[in-house]
Each structure stands twice: as C-alpha cells, then as structure tokens.
Length: 239
Ligand code: APR
Image (tube, rainbow, N blue to C red; front, side):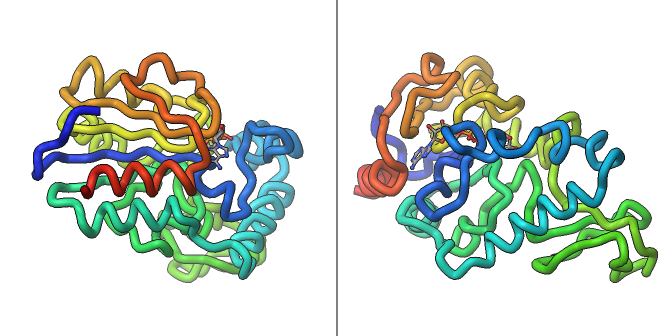
C-alpha cells in the first residue's frame, strides 16, 4: 500500500467476520446462520409475509444474543474507532452488519447499509424506533399506536440497502478502500471494490480470514484474524 496524504479520505467496509471474535455468528462460514435457517424464510419480504411470527422470533433471538454480556466490541472494532479519532482525514465506516459493536467501540461516522438489529420500523407510519426488546404483532407503534405493523429495521434480500447515494459518492472520492471480514457474496457491497478501482482513485485493500469471492480485484490482500490484522493496519496508517 502506498503512503497516504495526511488529508486522505479512507472508506472502510465491514462484514460479519469483524464481529465473529465478539461471539456473533457469520452467515456463510461453517456453522454460520445460513446453515441453520433459510434466507427465504427469515430474510426476505416474502418470508415475512408468509410467516411473520417466525421472522419476528428469529430477530428476537438475535436481539437477545446481542444483549449477552459476553458480546463486546473486539480489538478490530476498537482499532477502527481509534482510526476515526486519530486519522487527520475523514474515515467513513460502512457496515453490512446489523449489530451495534462499531458504535459501542466508539465509531460514529458510520452507515449501516443493511439496517440495524436494535431498530424497528412501522409499516403504517414509517417511523423508526430504537428497540432492544422482543417484538411481536401485539406491540403498538410508539408513534401511530397501530399494532401489527412493526418490523425489524433491517434490509432483506430484494430490498434496497440504505444510503446508497452517499456510499457511491464516497467510493468515487476515497483515497483508500478497505474491506474487512466479508465474503464478497452479496451485492451491492461485493461490488464496491470495482466502484473504487474503475470509477474512483483510491487504493484497495482486503483484510479477511480467508480469500473472499472478490479477493482478486483488490490490489492488496492480507489474511488473518480481524482482531490481529486490523489493529496492525491501523497502527501502520497512524505511524
Ligand atoms: N477475522 C476476519 N475475517 C473473518 C473472521 C475473523 N475472525 N471470521 C470469519 N471471517 C471472514 C470469513 O472468511 C468470511 O469471508 O468473514 C467473512 C464472513 O462472510 P459472510 O458470513 O458471508 O458474511 P458477510 O460477508 O458479512 O455477509 C454479507 O450477507 O446474508 C447477508 O445481510 C447479510 O450482511 C450480510 C451479507
């Protein structure tokens, strides 16, 4: 990786791999979430319409898992928060993750492109609410008071990820794009590296435990545990 100018704009993309060492499952590694439940049943609008109770229970279990005292930000989350605090240019963190570990580590210039496990959205009035409890059809919307219309504020397959215009602006302008802990299976996130390489000016770096579906497109790849290679990367940048 070439040295960065002091005002360089760094864009980071994270996936489930960065939260693995905090005790949260990934999706496609062995024993991952999609080996236990079907995407079509719990992560699509059709699945929700077909069986809303199953979907609510799936996210209630994940919300409960996130409240487990053992689940804490790890050294990789903390290193990215340090980079945002100490780097002399902008650092934008785009995460595919719906957990709140980046916030709890101290990151704030943050986009949850697939939504957030601790938020719900009313399909009647559109209001979004912070929600860490169980959700069921009996719960009335805190805003419009209609029951049965509250769903997880999470982007399901077939729905449009959040803040895509802001994301693609950033990809076209950044000086460095770093992908961390994602398998590169799901678009549009899997295509961000092309946006940087072919429409932007930034360098591209992948930090992952295993080669991803997109590794060959990155100019540089580093393999290892996020809790090891992300702090090393941040220390190198801040040196
Ligand atoms: N350190 C670094 N990388 C890791 C670690 C670790 N400790 N553990 C696993 N990984 C890597 C794996 O090698 C894999 O490439 O994290 C990646 C996890 O891949 P996925 O399980 O596919 O998760 P992700 O890429 O985030 O999935 C993208 O798919 O199902 C949807 O909406 C869901 O946001 C998710 C999207």
